[in-house]
Length: 239
Image (cartoon, rainbow, N blue to C red; front, top):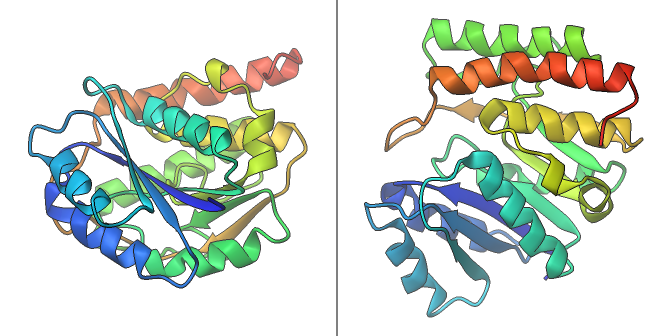
């Protein structure tokens, strides 16, 4: 297993079968790990049916809705335990285009962390978002860059690729944030350990089915986290 796409799910039955089909059909030999938080809509049942005929599909079932950050941490541990070299984060709702995977792999030949950016080179590549959400997202990324110094334009995006060495260097047990904050914290900690981060442009399309998991708590957690990271960095305590 060399390349693994981690897909956290909660009530994604409408999307997961089609997404897995697209990922497995790409010419990169991808494995896919679905981390499901006991979705009441039967997401896990769809994945198990695919597993019966496709050994590259893996399922990690958790006892309840434990959050995006912990889903990725569990997925990262699975990847590291299985010797994976290229470890992807990806949403289940088709907001991230599976065809962009090739660009991530190409960029990862010269970078330790590759971020799919919606706000690169002065362009905004977001489709179907209401204006208020777009302004919130763009402002949050500007705020993150100013407060933390993290030299990226889209620190809150969830389409990413880590090289194994970068994840091995991060103490996953000390990463406790969720949602946007989790994405910021992981990139910040990789950057502070001297790993190379590269952004590539992606087109982000709002979900075609199912409900968004965004809420006010996720926004406030990210707003607080950037100051926490700033102060930990000032005192040399980023772990």
